[in-house]
Length: 421
Image (tube, rainbow, N blue to C red; front, side, top):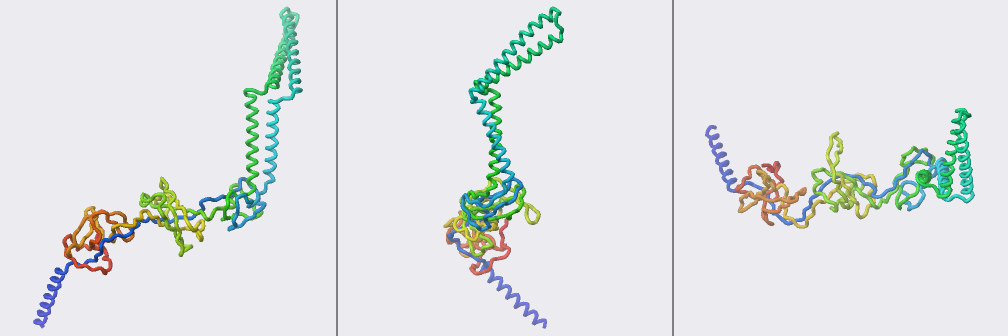
């Protein structure tokens, strides 16, 4: 038995030495590919919501009732079409009152600027009468002043004569101002005051007219009714949204892109739009705008993330895509027809430098490269590698610069490939 064990151990040792010798001669087994020219894209992914590019929303501006409703969701409407009516009884009363007040103020101004001849004659007569009364009061005051100074008149009677003269003087001046206004029209602060009253009356009339017009729900564009949020006879509070219409052929998507990806976006880039509501459809779009600022949004995990708002215009066919849908966006930041590419697993980083293992005469040579676009599967090589050269895919830790290798092209990807310094 002892002899048998010794013989078996000898056989195993010889076999192990032969295997090690053969492995050293064959080299480390690696998966390889050739660097080749291919198209490459750099895509940014985001999710957003579809909305109308152009829409008209009808709101109430005062508490009232829905008197007439002529449309339902999905109806196509034309510009100028009446979609419904709100009760306008109280508003009409306010409008008529404002109109009457404006007409009265306007008439008052016109009367002041363009008086009738008989009115001017009447003011002139009033002026002359006031002047005569004032002159008589003056004479009476002078007589009583002399009597008072001589002691023939009491102080009370003298004071009464002085007061009467002052009153007649004031009436005389007022009559003169009225005559001047009749002859020359209002000037200065009188004219300014009359004009201000006119403007105030006009503003109120315009407000009431605007309120009255809003009781008629009239379409300002061609489109489709996307929402009717009230029923006939409903009493609605101020600010209630009633009807929404829009052009369903012109849609856009609002979305938020992570701050890490936002620097690669520019208006005009192509966008692919997909939605779970239409799993067999793919829509096209153009990146319309990228916000100059970022916002912080809450996440489902009660955290937050910084995003840059973007707007994508849908181009081409929009059939089946509805406002309010959630969609996925694939924004093509870079799209090159010809690029030298290798699998992204081929590029490793050593001491902060990007490198690849190039096979030269069955030896792995570590070479520094300059990379460009990274896609989901490939990495663009800008410098350091030529088309047709063979590189190692997912090099393992045992592979070193100068290692002898055995190439295979059908091995599965190596787990835990080295991509660190």
